[in-house]
Image (cartoon, rainbow, N blue to C red; front, side, top):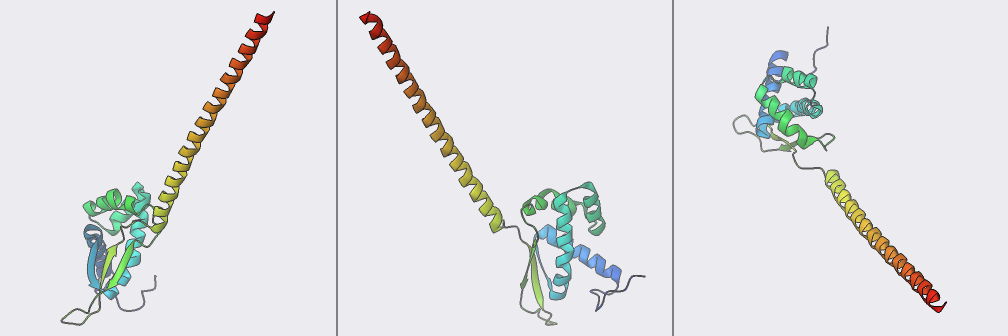
Length: 173
């Protein structure tokens, strides 16, 4: 028998917590950011990170596993088709949690959890280095082409000189 999770459950029983996490994850994927309590945001973060990691691979088995966790076909399709390619260069850290002011009424600590859609600094740096490398390669090819044309011109000039000297020698005889 599995040991129960330590601490208080969010929403009551284990099934209620699973449904609540599923709905929070679906809302986060659909809207990009949601406002919730700190406790729910802390539980949601690893849950959604694992789902996004599965979505990045994009296999049918992973799609079915995610559909088991989030039974909203349109949200899962959006995650796999549109969001997962945006996270392709990111190795983790797909979400960002920002602390907000306490909620009026019950003074509960609130947070905004959102998806990080900006490209990582390393991917931008990789793109810049690839662009610089391709520019250097083009310059090198241009220099090689100029060198080859210069060599061909020298070879033609040498051949012309050889022909002139041969013509002069034949005229002298």
